Length: 155
Image (cartoon, rainbow, N blue to C red; front, side):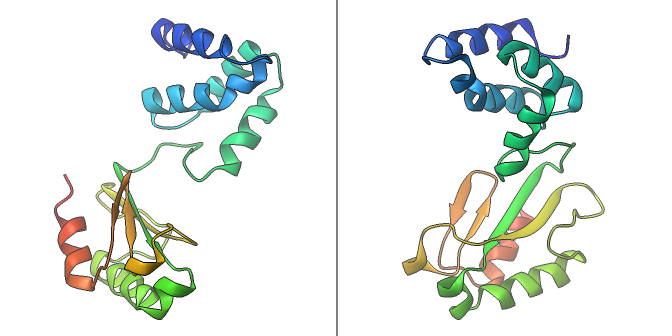
């Protein structure tokens, strides 16, 4: 059993909040993701048993959302918004400079495994562009120095 008893109890409680069992799959994914940092095939199999679905159905949900991962991840994720308003205010240039600073391309992890740098289409704060999401925290009105300071300060 990969899912802890404590997490399983929380999943069972979530299932009770929905008229159909499968409605609790998304909250369950958040719970196991919090415990493991990603959804492994073993976790997907256990969730499939709990929800009486196929493991591929679980993995389809995991692959649909950009907040779930199907393999181990670096400690931090930084995503620069590259949608049109942010791009017009320098986001693509900012991303290229960050790639150069860390010696990686968007989508790659730094050699120390501390950070993966990427881009997203919209982070929803066009008036404060360019912006970046680091893990669950949003930073607005960035330039290279501000972004570099934020990312260099990650532990």
